[in-house]
Length: 153
Image (cartoon, rainbow, N blue to C red; front, side):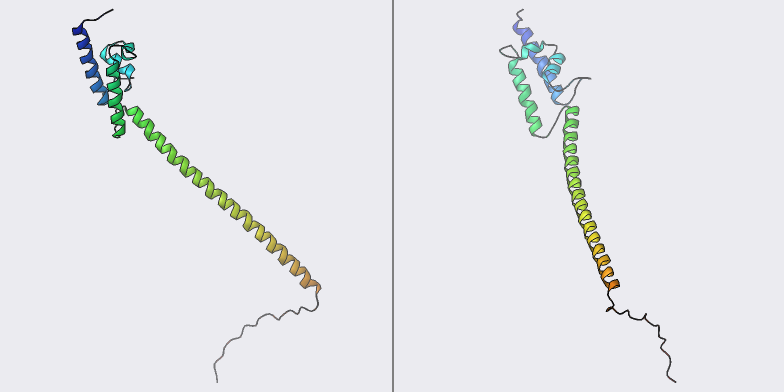
């Protein structure tokens, strides 16, 4: 079905108005900042935005403006902004988790080495005690006496 030039102009005006609202972040409930929502808000068939259809240039303009907003760090769709924020936060947490796991592995290795050293030292002490107990050449020193320093009379 062909539309008149006046209808086409009216449709383009509705599309541009809807485009401006969406890019300002005024999203309808359940809508996103995308072509599907743009078509629904402008009351135009979505297929008219693709290929050689009459409003393909408006789709390209919408996508260009949306990309420019993204590059400027502005995201009109609050859900998309939340997704990006959560992905960034998730990446940071994964990095912290990886670092924590590496530190835990280092401490576990250190603990294992320390326990092995203690066990080896204990075995050496036991061996030396056995050698000392079997040898008569080792003399035991008398226990230390406590001396009181007296006054000179």
